[in-house]
Length: 221
Image (cartoon, rainbow, N blue to C red; front, side, top):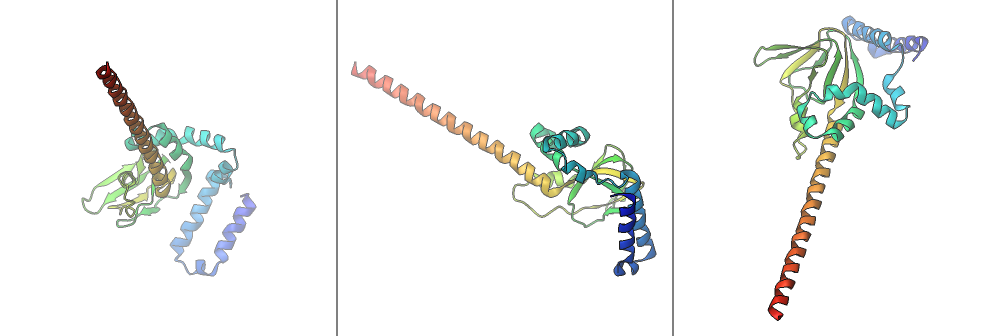
C-alpha cells in the first residue's frame, strides 16, 4: 500500500456511514492505528510480501525471526525442532497502538503473542496482581495446556485482562495452527511407536519360531 492508497483507504473508512456513528474516541483510535501501521511498515504488507516469496525462503526468514521466541515455551521445545519449524512458519506479524485492549477476563484465548518490542500489562481480577510484559515475553500461555488435550476441548477462557502500555510489535500464533501442528507431530510419534512395536512383535515371533524348529530338530535326532 503506497501513501496515496493508504490515504484513500482511510478516507473510505471515514466516509462509511456506520463509522461516523462511532464515538470520537473510537474513531481516533482507528486513525492512530492506521498512522502507526503506516509509520512502521511504510505501507508494505509484510505478511503478503512473505507469502509471495518461495516457500522455503519464507520458512527460513520466519525461523530466523521467531525461533528464539518460540523456544521460550518449554512444551514446544520438548516436541523437538520439527514442531518449532512448523510453528515458525505459522506466525504472523501484528502491530498494536498504545492502550489497546487485547483481551478481557472471560474472553476466549485464540492466540499467543510473542513480543518483539513494546510493553503489555496483564491484570488478574481474582488476585489483583498486575504483571508487565516486555520484549521477548509472551502471553496466551493458556493455549499450551489446551493444545495438549487430544479431546479437542473448547478454547480456554482468560482469567486475565491484557492491554498495551506502549505501541507494540509482536508475532501472533493462532490456536488452530498450534493445534493442527501439535496433533500432527503427536500422530507421527504414535505411528512410529506403533510401527516399532509391530517390528518388535514380528522379531519375537520369528525368534520363537526359530527356537521351536531347533527344539523339534533336537527331538528328532
